[in-house]
Image 1 (spheres, rainbow, N blue to C red):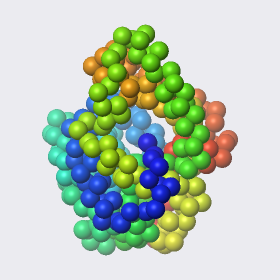
Image 2 (cartoon, rainbow, N blue to C red):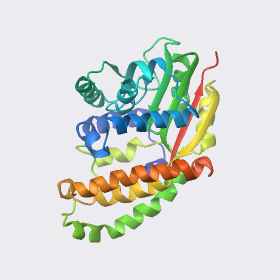
Image 3 (cartoon, rainbow, N blue to C red):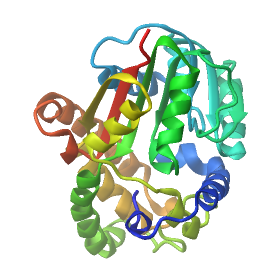
Image 4 (tube, rainbow, N blue to C red):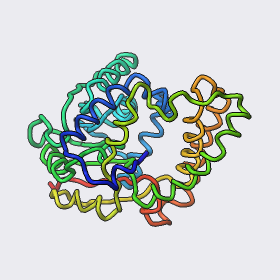
Amino acid sequence: MLTGRMAAQPLPADVIRDANTRYHDDAAAHYDAKWGIDYGEIGRTQVVGKLAKALGGDVPRFGRALEIGAGTGYFSLNLLQAGVIEEAVATDISPGMLETLQANARTLGLEVETVACDAEALPFEDASFDLVFGHAVLHHIPDLGRAFREIRRVLRPGGTFAFAGEPSRLGDRLAQVPKRGATLLAPLWRAALRARPARDPGRHGDADPELGEIVDVHAFTPDELARHARDAGLDAVRVRGEELLANWFGWTNRTLEATAEPDDVPMAWCRYAFHGYLLFQALDRRLLEGRLPAAVFYNLMIAGRRAA
């Protein structure tokens, strides 16, 4: 979720990096449960589908891949299981997230190299990856120009980059409508479910909500996002939008859920919210994506390559 911080005076880059580290360290233990992360068939289908959409076609097989802002491993681990990538290196500014990622990898019987580092200074040799990718990470990075130059540097000639889940400026404004509506309906919703009001509304595990006001530093127009990549020397840059109805449905439910004690939200509601989200995702994909301007969608995805 975006915050008012992005409209305010930017904070120093080192403050933003420190806030991202501490916030995501604290959120790591509860992250997969909060967002319904799946490492089975549904998760693999979601992740491969997003990569295919970003690339604009079939997903080839990649050799060595680098994920930036890997979190608990949702993308890297599912791409490994799907056979899309042969070797995964996962980075994150949060050591706590990478500890959870390694625990997930052990459970799945997968091997992943993890490196805690800043996306603006990647500790890898030039031209060492066939694919560089990430999800919902670019909007956390203070110096995007430097980060994209690092992405180009570590890509092999002819290599591919792809990022999804980046907030659209207009899409985020549109999403405020269902959020406000859900806030007004929340007392009636809790009464119907016999749920107690949340002691810490919207809290992300043990993460400090005040840090949450700092970690999101960008929202993009499609042109702005593409310009960052092109200015870094990347080629064949393509930006498209994803999720409109699914986003409105999802934010309505998340806003309601954030007002209640988590243990009071029944499993039947969780199933409804999850399967409804998948349904609206499919409607977006079939009816709206590719027909409406990318800017109106909540999420932007960008892909391209380093010239051979």
